[in-house]
Length: 572
Image (cartoon, rainbow, N blue to C red; front, side, top):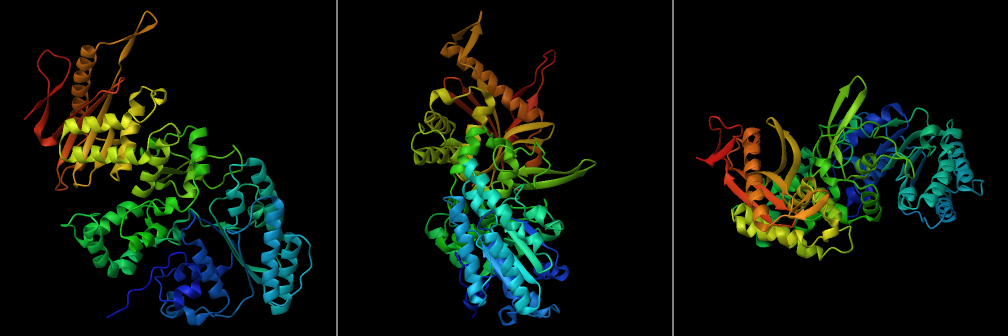
């Protein structure tokens, strides 16, 4: 009986991973390709996505630790020569960023630790001068060019990104430090640099003229994180026990199979891609899920989100639009400190968006973006809804959102209407934009908060449906939402409509919504899956009345009476 490997939660050191019987995804074939031509490389990936483990693996290869690689591709299938190289390995993740002085002090201390272990005494009072001297001294000591591995090169800048002045000062200081890589070129060998973002004017890119950026290179799309094949290979032996635990905790229904649990894990944590094809699971969240046996926003909750909240609020970012696939963007590689950067670029590089697909045109590559998975959808929905301090208890709103889903899948329109109305009443009246798009976004966010798989404004049939929901009952719900005004302008003044007038207009809106679903064939895409399809016409008024008509798609058809200009729907 084989022993189940341990979960490497918080462990990035390659030696510990290999000697401690921890789960390890073998990326050495990819690393071997990098080592063949010795080109300096840069890789951007989100935090906690396996970059540090990758750099640690490279260090073990470069220092000739062949014994640690038995059973891995580079040991068993390559002709790598395992000659040890001098290596400078720096991680900037733990650098103190209170000021430029603390950044420089910590950098210098890290370099001095390396020098001490090598029994060297480089010259230099500043980090840049000491760094250059250390590279030259190591070259002289070993008679070989020095490999340079820098992990999380941008961590000090990101830590202060919301403080533009300090962030710029840190960027300039690091620019001077990284500029050494150019002046020490004749002494420097293999160079590999990781970070979350590619900052303009950080010198690391101008210093290394031939630096190859692997971030969006399809050949290296699987360099970090778990591919689907790796996930199945590494975690298959954990599925039976985890399925039993999730059933006992009520996380998944008692009829669920291992395949059902696997698919649910993929819904929550799969979906990252940097080439539009290769899907990657978030390693941090997958490990924590198998450790805890319940679904949660593990990766999102592991980092500070204050800057993200500020970005969304200050730039008035509509989170719903990122699921529409409507827009395209170019030039996602580089951002800058301050206002001079694309919100989409930062959200992509930080891991809150991912590349859905890539289109190559005469003008270059265009990237269609989306949320990668349910974890990010749920987290961003919660953040977007709770940016206002005046909002009610977040837990209460999540419970109300879950009540909406429960009512929907039980086909209880009255219960749904009450739950959605209660949800809306938690948002201050002055926050309402009184538009269809706004209430559509609120509905979408409620569904995401409740952990449902959904998207909006997707082109289907001959139009764009408002919201598609693949609920936990496995059925598809096509939702068309209409907003009904509670007041109209008469001679320049706003006049409230009577309750009877509003209800009459809501009836018309519900009919119009159902006709739109039928006429534009929104349900056609979801047919043939073996599950039921429901059409949901949803109307919300300016005074927060909610009405829902919900029927199975097969029960409705579109009709047009002779002599009448409009369509209507009738029950079959």
